[in-house]
Length: 311
Image 1 (cartoon, rainbow, N blue to C red):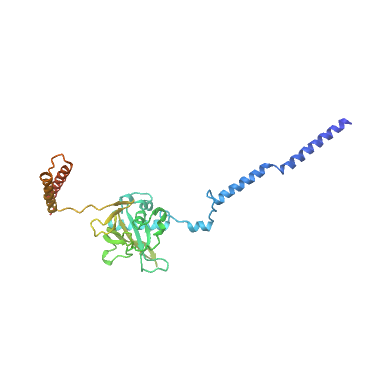
Image 2: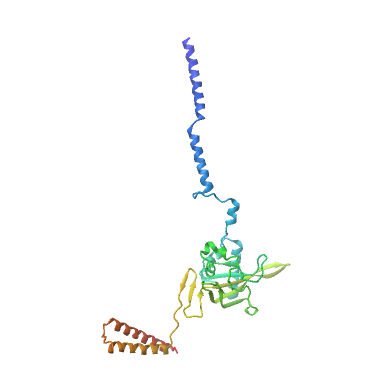
């Protein structure tokens, strides 16, 4: 009888073990911990490390800006402008643009300002500031844009207040000028105006087919320059010379004529004599040595001016 009971007990124990395992699986702590981790991960993905909710697709699309180097329309316009310049002059716009694989990218970073303006956009007229169709990094810098790589949309496809670059050329120019000089940006208030000297400007055109005929359509007018001036250019020292890359220099002092130098030599010689005879200073005295040094400098400048034939 005992022998028959043992197998039954073994079967009963096995069934109880299975039931206990099944029941414990409903209370295991592991799935609970995994669930919490998943919630935390989901929270990070949704809000980012800052804890702020991520932007939805529409908000992200509205904030998205296409860099001019990546915009197919602006790349095409830049290439067209460079091609028109080379066609009319027989030379490249800048040495940095020769033989490059990606011309629009090289133009964006080139140390020459290029600004293309026009008048046509949706519902606009030719009145007021011109529409900026394109500007590279140096051009944006000349137009007063801080951080051009990210703030290019403050000017491109906009009509900047005070911009004075004409969007057309006179008939006599034959669609190209090499020495355009004008105040191109009137900032107003305390900000200094900007002037360009000897800039190149030309009409940007591209070939189109209309009614089966090949025609040249005007895209805009391009302006290129390697330096500009901020401030009063009519004053000898009232302006600053600006170049791409944030370069700002004071203008060189105006040349001194031979007659002015001769008068300065006479005056400085008299000052040296006064220090010796009236002041009683001897060689080695700092004040006398400085005066003699200045006299020698003026005499050397006078000699150089005389040899150069300065008036």
